[in-house]
Length: 132
Image (cartoon, rainbow, N blue to C red; front, top):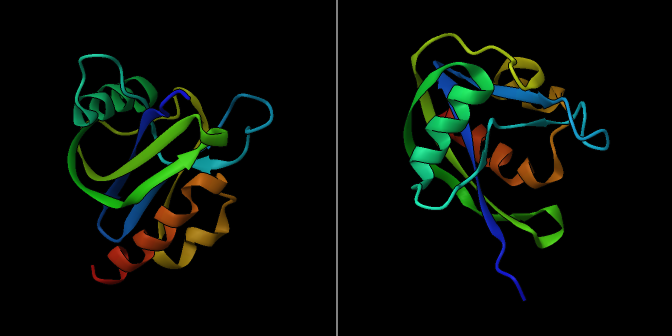
């Protein structure tokens, strides 16, 4: 059996809020919310992939911090999602590849419909933000 491909997500934090991104595609996922990020390419570290993906998807630079939550199996077992706390390090995020972006406080995290694979991290982030 093939090993799942590693996908990384950035829980970009500004003060007591986290950036959420609404998928624009594929059609079956459009409108669901996630953390910006994407696939780790050959020869990249997870942090390098996350910085590259945020440049491509948001037009912003980030500083990657510690992991949030554990490994999450998504996409019917095809992907292994790892989410990292991050902070902006240049530029203002724009939805270059997403339908929308929203900054959410801990008590607002349930106001968007998250991709099911992201929900365990959303719960972990609630605790992180509560300790802000």
